[in-house]
Amino acid sequence: MQIADGIHYIGVNDHDIDLFEGQFVVPDGMAYNSYAIVDQKIAVMDSVDQHFGQEWIQNLEAALDGREPDYLIVQHMEPDHSANVSLFMERYPQATVVASVSAFNMMANYFGTKYEGRNMVIKEGSTLSLGTHELSFVAAPLVHWPEVMFTYDATAKVLFSADAFGKFGALDVEQDWDCEARRYYFGIVGKFGKNVQAVLKKVAALDIQTICPLHGPVLSGDLTHYLSQYDTWSSYGVETPGVVIAYTSVYGHTRQTVEELAAALSKKGAQRVVVTDLARDDQAEALEDAFRHSVLVLATTTYNGGFFPTMHEFVSHLVDHNFQRRTVAFVQNGSWMPAAAKGMRALLEQCAGIDFAQNVVTVKGSLDDESRAQIDALADELVAKI
Ligand SMILES: Cc1cc2nc3c(=O)[nH]c(=O)nc-3n(C[C@H](O)[C@H](O)[C@H](O)COP(=O)(O)O)c2cc1C
Image 1 (spheres, helix red, strand yellow):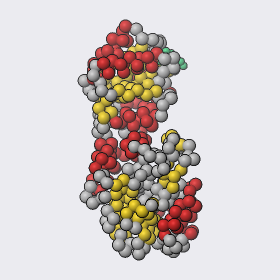
Image 2: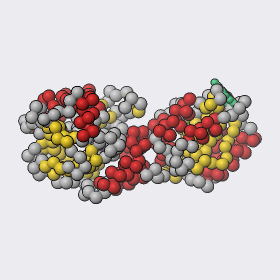
Image 3: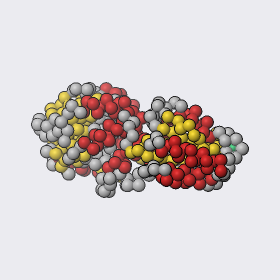
Image 4: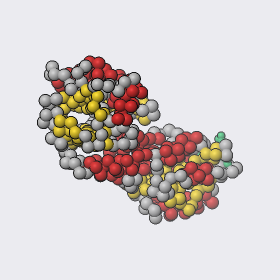
């Protein structure tokens, strides 16, 4: 598949993977993208996951039509992209590997060599001419690893963006971009909003017609939507006004409380209320929902003096991913000494700019008039904050 003049797609689809990066469910598989820029010199953009080396080489050789590659540009050393660097370097002994200093340090760790004598160290502003295609490199530290470089092809007006603008899902599955790109962003890149903002500012100065990420589809046409989504996500802005209620429940009373709160919110004018069961639904989906919307309600059981383990896991994800600048409310259940709200709040105090709702719903085992009045008061407070 030709993406632009001289630029070929040579990546692979993975439908065998169970969990991406050891934790994310990917029901539609995953794509490991790689590209060949065929010019007077030939550059290959990154390799692919360890299981697909032979397929990748076949794709490369089909695109090269008997020629041999001159460069392997390693933008990102995460093994789903770098696992076949050594295969490439053995197969093409004339080729040079092009990467940042930190990428070469990681190559020493992974492959036991920095390819001395066959390497080209690049940094922000370095250039590489392939003949017609003029490449320049844009440092993207911590988007989302420290060694990451973007590559800009000024001739084809293509930005090779490493993991940025990537998404879950193989390329032979038709899918809306936003949903799985958002889940990918907040699960994997989201902690590093400042770094994403910094690199977005740099690429804003470039004339870009096509974005070639290392996962997900090549983006072309009007890029405004993708750039604007990345700007909102990386600045922790609200994408969709609404309430997310993330809950756990052992015996159903907390679930019933959540259902009544959701109904009260809708009745009082909330246009969008999303409810997720943290023990059964995908927590990565819940995480992206929390970052997407304006208000988050956490509802859980007091559990051995603390709070329920799956809620603990979710709150840890929020803190780890730099959750910030949102309204957060608590619903707690406790048959003898409710303490879940206090425990959750203590962890979330680490997050910047959280507006904790004044009203807390406390259910002592099962709902009663007092807790129903609290639901009503909390719904009033939250509707005003959406
Ligand atoms: C293993 C376990 C530990 C619990 N620990 C506490 C506790 O420390 N303090 C408390 O007040 N209630 C505690 N509870 C009681 C729960 O609040 C009660 O079971 C309630 O019904 C849970 O809400 P649910 O119906 O939504 O599951 C505990 C319940 C379980 C099952």
